[in-house]
Length: 211
Image (cartoon, rainbow, N blue to C red; front, top):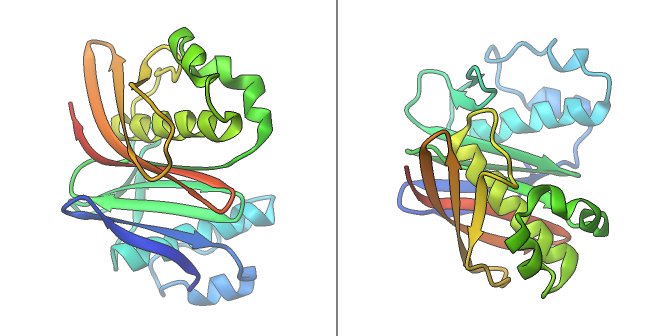
């Protein structure tokens, strides 16, 4: 089981990172018996998508044994018959997952220079001005992942990363904390997050929030 990184998150949670190295046959053979309909991933056109489906559920079995993923009306993942909360993200060959006793969020993205071309679509004008003062793709990916992880806690549709979610007083320093504020339809969510670089990927996850 290629869990390449794992550690506690806050007082009651933990997060893990899985690197996909197995063949589909190997992944299929690792699945717990009778929990999931294994015909589901066979409906996916791309092999990578099938591998993500298997690995996500194997990683969940490691974090919350005996649980099963379900999704609400907004597409937010949850666990059938469990009070635990999860959040899932995947990019490239990595799958990141976090569990906690409160709604939580995690995001992972491969760092790529092309993000500079779309920065204005997810950063406010003030954030754009501030973001341009530091190392570019890394800093921009930190903004992106922090906002995405915050959004996943909230989990409702109609939220704009640019207009509804704002990273406060942000100085780029991987391994440190950031504060993010989401404002939507009269609701305010404030999250404290950690973010870090793992190989060529940016990773951000929620450690505390207040709604």
